[in-house]
Length: 421
Length: 170
Image (spheres, rainbow over the protein chains, first blue to last red):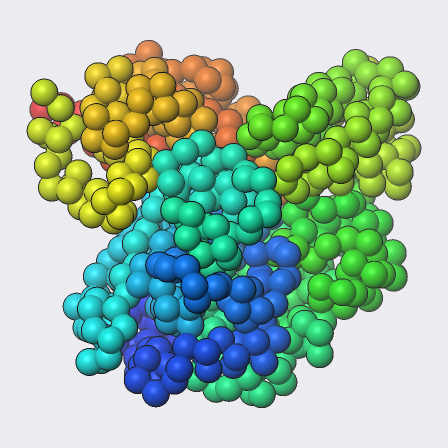
């Protein structure tokens, strides 16, 4: 299958223009939904399609929507456009180049739960993207796709962008809501879940940008059509962000179930200078480091398989490739630096633990480490695990523990040496 | 006098209109960006103005400024060159790029050029991993991405920005 359905701008030039998007069948799904479908029909179609959240957790989208209670009003929908995981850059391309498909998906989600206002929370660095979206939203308002009493119905909808200001943690949905409410971006204790107590304490659906970009396709073509792509448990298409030591890094839209080998060698052009591949991180800096043996390379990239076969999450499918030029001790120093910087400071094990992990990892990478530092580093990581409110604490330990377990020799090599990498 | 309201009356109203009237505090982040338009940093006066507009306390606004990395309380370079040195970029030469850039410009990371125009900073992932080395340039007018960089192309960009600043000064 060569046609891009999410990265549609690669097949249809100027799809970022509203007239081109409409000429290619865009906005018919939203019109159809508002004029001839009950909200629950939209919800059920998405449920039947088997679409799973593309932000990382892989939770069934239609099921998430159905948790919104009809006894508490108003409802809100929030698009999570805080894409910040090292190795992930798919939502940015979608919003920059195929903005209307994402916006239509957001509008359909809002209709399905009868929200009259939806917010797009973008990471602050996406300043230019927010400008593009503001302009597209104004065009949709002007053309009567947003506003009051749409298509002479009783349904009204408005979309708003909101820029963050540089905090990875705001991609965690409860921290995102805190940030959007004007507070520090720190995660909330759950339950209650956002579906019941969300934005402004009202029922709120939060979906990733790519998840939403799938929705117009499902409503327009039907759940049955959608299920022909991907696998039974992970239907549909997925954008894989490929980076690291490959010849052709970039976004690749492929069916779920494609193997790592296909992604790296058929699409990504193989390893730089034909070096041997050493390891894979399947879900950005938050994933374990998986040795790239045949079992890993032939593993289908879908939510269950990577977890069962490799013990690694698929996450948002930000696949980072490591070759034999990479020392895993150095790499772990990069991940601990990231998480130390991004810990929100709420939970002590994460706030203090990421500091100490980074301190020890830096000591090792700069050639000042002692042999016992390797064990010490791992023990700090293990003391963080299971003790934090949100997954960031857990994520910060993944590369550390797996790196030491699978590539201890790399760390030992750092100790023996007396100069920095 | 609320300087922000006086200077940007329309923008303030547009921002406040995005959120339910009972939740004006949601406007704190966009209002802080507005405050930062004045020299790429936020003054004590501006913190008071934002508190006034949102109904938040000075301490609350101050906490928000301190929590997020894109708000600055100190006046540094007019253009902040924020280079990503996170793992995916570093796998493709970001560390070496930054080192070499600093050597060419003649300042260290965190420092500002003597003309007050450029500050070089290290930042974490910017979602440009496939186009490393890359950076964003933050100025009082917003943020722009620059990708697939070389030291030469970055020095050329800095020349352009310098000329632009000189034009504006005339």
